[in-house]
Image (cartoon, rainbow, N blue to C red; front, side, top):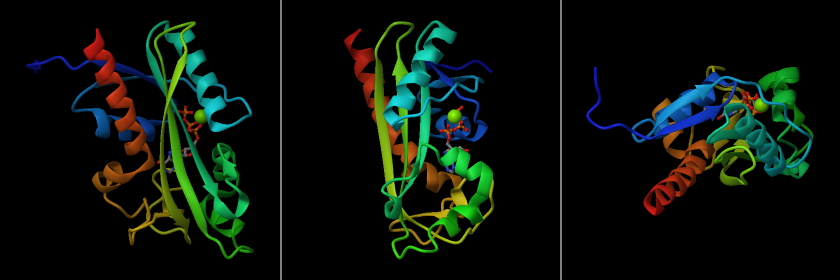
Length: 193
Ligand SMILES: O=P(O)(O)OP(=O)(O)OP(=O)(O)OC[C@H]1O[C@@H](n2cnc3c(O)ncnc32)[C@H](O)[C@@H]1O
Ligand SMILES: [Mg+2]
């Protein structure tokens, strides 16, 4: 089937199938999201630093415009930790363990966030687009199909990310918010050409 209009292409360097799926669901009507599957090395540092380094490396590999994304989950009682290190915590102790980490704290508040990086190509600066959602950490509820979705319940909702329909998560999530900022930037850039 041929398309009437060609959407601009975005090259998304990620090794995470579920992130790719969500970005396609959020931006797929306006962009052709192409994946370069590569597990980019992640330095130790703030989420911004991690994203900038991932994006620089991705641009070197692809030799052209790329986006990358780094996700974090920060517990308010722990001043934002695990933050960018959530991947390693999740991999080692799972959702149940993440929930139990807060057993000794009254404050179950958390922030789910992600930062997209955009880089025009090797040697170019990296632009950052951040999206955050406040919520609480709850006992794992819902199917564990994507990371820590079962323990994160966004404020204002009765369901965890894992219990929500994909459409709902993708219209309110940290990733949605960051994608909207990225989209605005890309549209503005296209207008200036
Ligand atoms: O190749 P990249 O894009 O880096 O993919 P990754 O899987 O390594 O992802 P991160 O470094 O950003 O680590 C974030 C961790 O949080 C998980 N995660 C990311 N987005 C999520 C979301 O929206 N809901 C639940 N878990 C998520 C993800 O599976 C990782 O374990
Ligand atoms: Mg990673």
